[in-house]
Length: 403
Image 1 (cartoon, one colour):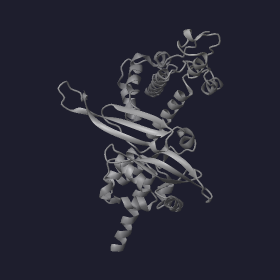
Image 2: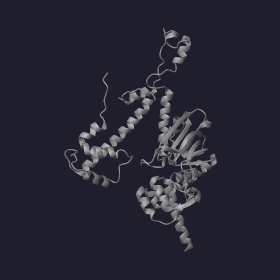
Image 3: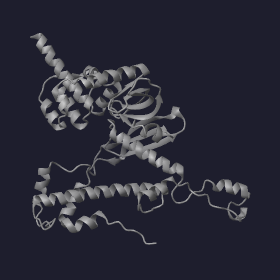
């Protein structure tokens, strides 16, 4: 059987853009986003002397920039694929080339075969055990693909990490991050813990640096049925809040779903709080609300629906670009309060988590608009935008009454 070799990013793009631009693509691929603006990248390309003519003999900077950006994306994707392959090998996956979706689905669904032990004696399999005992012991043996539990745990881990990345949580530190994901069959164990420490073996750059980097250890425990209980219902992240477990409740109101759930909010710094209550959500998954009780979750969702149907200003309906919205409000001078966010339908858990993730003082009750806009640039939740607009309308109304 001939092994199928997939061309690497270098083999595909190096002949097209040449060594100098490929080195530039390598440097750009080390970050999550392309550096600077398109104009900045064009200036960098233009400064590369003796670069290769690319794309059908075109010597324009635009053609070189497009080819370099394509190479950057290919290199970044190749790194991700290699990381997935390393995880698969660590779990004992068989390195089978993915030829088609049908082949892959068959490999993922198959049940590992139990090796036969017919004709074998206890002495040449498990010495000291009877044939019946040997067969029972061999039931745990698997082929190259890893056991069903190993493959399930790997899928759960990927889903949990993806949910964290999509949420408003921010546990990033300068040092190492040690993440552990555990699947449990005991509902009481579901939760999340985080602990930071000074890693003196990992200091800031400089041979004589006296400052140690902060590292973090995170442990997330989710139910064994996390994929069916949370992911399949699209509940991994609701209003920026990460959900650990959810169980559907009866709800006779049309267009509304209610779940008894456990979720996470971020405390001050890198601390984590686990909450248990109810999530009410519209059937189209557009709006959701977290509450301590069934009734409070439903009431909060209804209020949020009413406010969504009657936005504060025309700017809310126009769906402006994030940067344009931030520029518009960055030079204003007024305060945005926690009550403004609550008045526009946001739940307390989501407000706390967003504030702490962006180092905003929740306990102070209010903060200047410039700090809120800066936080909105980093984490543009629609609830934050509504709070800004509501605070501005409140400020204008007070000024009118005072006049």
